[in-house]
Length: 113
Image (tube, rainbow, N blue to C red; front, top):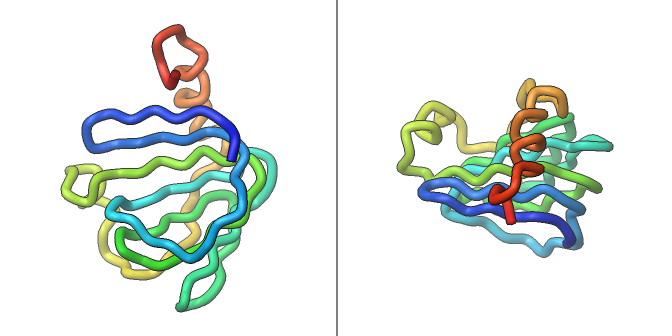
């Protein structure tokens, strides 16, 4: 893993190169967007591949990607509640262009470092 991370109340963001992962889960919803290749998420329920993948809180998984932007949302936040409705990983309609404002914000002094 190599990149940048930012953490704020109820949210965490990572942008960089994803490394090897063992099976794991966390107490946050995860949205991962592939910046230069698709994101592959393996779960006990199957494999999902897409330009962006949603991984709900508590779902055991492994992520395989090169460069990603991953957003982690506190499961109790309003934003996370809007994403509920599934207990399995799913491909979602987000492209690298959709997250360009987040990437640009990282370049502003004081953000993401």
